Length: 163
Image (tube, rainbow, N blue to C red):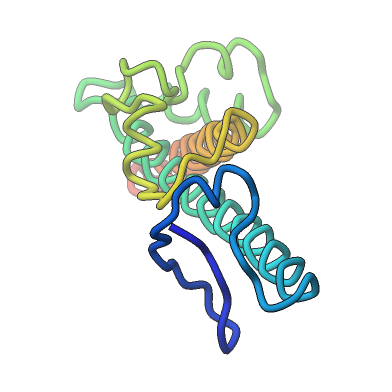
């Protein structure tokens, strides 16, 4: 396959002589067109990675919010909600370390790096560096979603409880 741009869009075209691709001799109309097509491919990848990174963050936030819903059960004393809320507001290590945010180790939400990359549905292999960006975006989103939703749950319980 050969990638090329036309009217601002990126297209793939089958190339009959595959050896021409590996030797970098695929005929182009001009060197300028060649450079333009590679710039378009690079920009396409940059845009693709940025969009996938945002999607990974959103997926992480969703996983974090869901995980926060499992922190308390129906037997949790009312005082615990207030203690956790105060700990979140103050960044108390005793509270922050007592609860586990979702990770990509497969234990929480059955999410793994492989499943994340599959959910992102990228049309190409993006490499280790960009995969690490997806992992960081997911984990950042998971942490934000977890702590935000846990705080919301605590506040809602206090409002219902009248504390």
